[in-house]
Image (cartoon, rainbow, N blue to C red):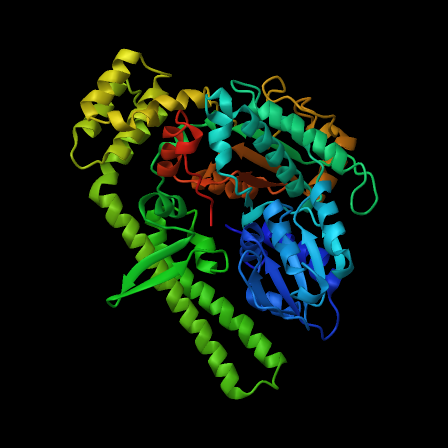
Length: 567
């Protein structure tokens, strides 16, 4: 079962760090400030706090640093920005001269290391107006309680494009990813052992070496002026081609299915009820969503009403205790609060029932039969457990059917190719021509740029082969790849008990995007292995269609490719 939504894991950790490093650092009793954000920090704050949280920290207005604004010279401004030329130039424009300053003074907090060139530019222009200038080392988005993204979807193109002209761009992207990953580790207060998948591409190896070097530099002296040794956690760095099968399968767990089949953008689900169009945000503030997002769609449809009653009764009991302790609240206010709880519960139930029904309508329309074919190809056995002897015979009904669009047929062809470990050029040409997908054939061919698929399964129990998953660093004995250690050895037993009590982390980073099914696995593995929490992240989050679109563009010139950032 998912952890209580109030914990919110990584989101809570990030918010507490921002609160401590930014707001507590510049807070003054009774003083209100204006807050300036750029594109990245707007997403960062939106992922881990609400406007009410900012109000409690003395922020009266939040502004976009890129937009023209009226001066408010009687108020101080808090700039929470990325250390980029664009954001710094916007700040300098606000303090062009003493007579033209937009605000009384400035508190500047950078998400990451500010280059000397930008720092010196600020120092030379308006140092007298600055009360604080700090780096807080958070260059990632906590997407969920155990999921993070670096918000750099162009990494996929630069890391996997065969065009040698992109070499400099790839080097810059690798450096940026390494710096961002270090801020993930720093925020979690971890100095993990860094491991990578050694074959068949060298992206993971190069990135792991960069991360290890930057971790070493960062932890020589951390914010507490202490040298930090290696912790009991591991960081696994993997190329996107490590598991192609799960990226194209139709998932039947709720979250993955919804994002695959429905037009959900920026986590916003649009639906109709009582003849009216409505919107709902799918987020971890919604208790019901957290409970059901990783369950099978059939279970979801059965359990929504039952779970809603359970959540509602728990909330009422909690609120009831609060009211008994706080009898000074007016009676009418208590009633209003109870009505809000009831209204929220009804709203959640309506949203998720609509979402589940929309998924099932798509499923019954043309996905149900397709799923059986996909499972047979992916597993190599049919529903009765009999080995699939002729994969092409399994595939053909899908290709001949008029119920499936080209995208679904391409996904099925890919599963067929993966199941037989590759096919001949002649056979591939025949498939592409017969299905009439010539214009989208690169969605299939360009998988070669991602390398041979390998699926790691044994990291939690420390069963990864150290030859295939080498370290970039010396690590604690518990993670040193020396194999299983008998729990009957008394010193080791005590050590493991201590480790279990303190908890270790497995931080995973996938170069080029993660899927919703992989996100689900992070939660499931964490629940199965209570002593180790899995935190999974990537450059961005993928759906099967988005991945195929990205793959299609790999052999196109850079100026023909558009990079869409996660909102």
